[in-house]
Image (cartoon, rainbow, N blue to C red; front, side, top):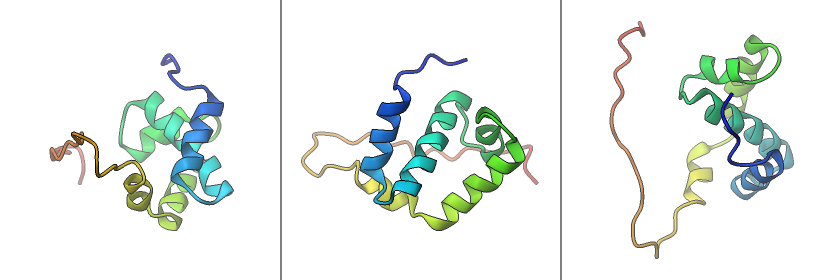
Length: 98
């Protein structure tokens, strides 16, 4: 298990900052926690990191991404006056993908 840098309350407050609706921020907090714990961008591995039924969590993540605009949420983290912006535009090959 990964050491938690943010408590569940802190993760929820961060998600509240990114998403306007309470239901979105609650789901986002759970998904963000699973992303950190899985250390993977793959939906299947994120769903596995969530407690409970991975198949149900996989569908929850898919529905969440279809309903919200993640780019809009990420723009809230951008600050024009910041002296630098951290980005990584590296393409990741997925040799196992069909």
